[in-house]
Image 1 (tube, rainbow, N blue to C red):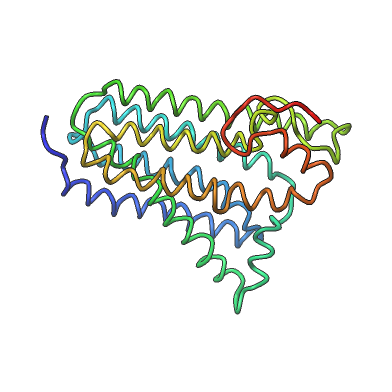
Image 2 (cartoon, rainbow, N blue to C red; image 1 turned 180 degrees about the vertical axis):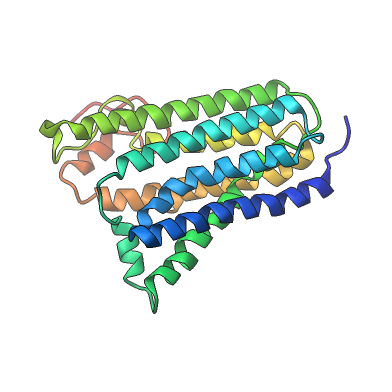
Length: 268
């Protein structure tokens, strides 16, 4: 097995950054024209897809072709599904309250403040979190059991994200559930099936980069950052602060696992 191609990978880091920021800048232009910055959430999945595709083209002749195809397909399926779901969920709605609250603090132009604090920041995060997607495509060796274990973990994550989102959408579409908490299906096993799914997706993609110790050392930053964001940062804690004000949430939280799926505890 040849060594890891550091020089080529370094060039790819620059190309991937360009792809991530290009997606965010185009999205910013569309958001300014439409007056809604919530569409940046759609760009999150599209940014990873762009990075995967750019890396696939740039890594030709360097990494194992089967691994390059697999990583690109897995990342694109995840990113495009997420983007489509967020776009569908947000149709017909006004500005996201999170961005309204953030832009209310703008010292000058709201749009320029959004560019700095939302779009450029998310572009940098896409680049950082996508390190396994980039590094895996430069691994010269063939796929091993570790890579297939990563694929299985990715599939588990996609299942929790897609099924959890679909269950929640059906629940909200029923007028009889207005004002009620979703506590059925996957939501009875974990309060955050979509966040748990995201967690599995990124640890799975990391395993695809682990057939080379060099790429593993680079890629491990990504799942660690995502785990911190999902469990202790802008994911679970922020949502639970909002949901905690709803009637019945304390009882739901008492019987339902906070993150990792577990059988629901009996109602008291």
